Image (cartoon, rainbow, N blue to C red):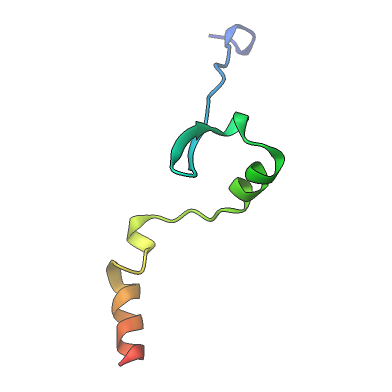
Length: 61
């Protein structure tokens, strides 16, 4: 397969906004700006799991 023959399919991104799942392409300028400023996390790095949680609990005691 050559590069000229490949086609990309647009991907629609959805996000929860005001309790509803909505496509990001339908957000107004303010909501889109807020969406871009959001930080993502993984469960392994969250405060409720893993070594980081234990370290913070020891410091708090």
